[in-house]
Length: 184
Image (cartoon, rainbow, N blue to C red; front, side, top):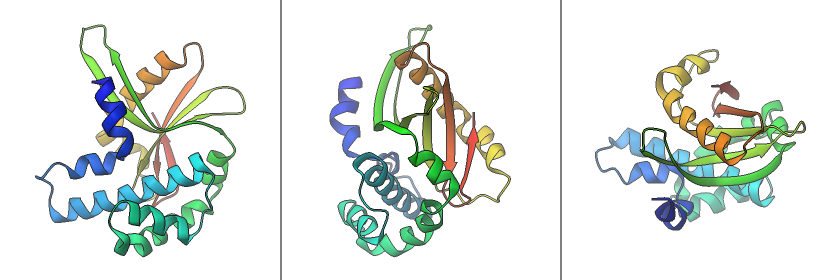
């Protein structure tokens, strides 16, 4: 499963993998497309050092095959890219973007996934980010994390703790619309 993730998942964002599920409604597919662009833009800026401007957003939208969604992505991303939270993220050392993992649980099951971003903070601790484009009211991010993403981020935490043994690991859902990080 890990080899499959390495060859296939690295070419796709989580939103693109979700789009492969044909049971999504049109609204869910559109949300997944927007998420795809946002993931690709953040990978380009944080992982490749590209400029945080419209040309990067347009390239990401074109790469995803949905250039008509670039302006919408810019409207969502621009406030985030100018935020203190993004400055805090940018100040960290990037260890990996779209990092696949696979590990065996004590119960003998294989857990696999892809972490959006893995950073190293100034104190040497590891910070795992999972970008979210959900429509959430400011102040309700932690509740949404607990209701919808707790299990996913819990698996990411386990993977990061195995990969970075002995280091403190922090896992956050980063809500792009509200410019907030909710920690697991």
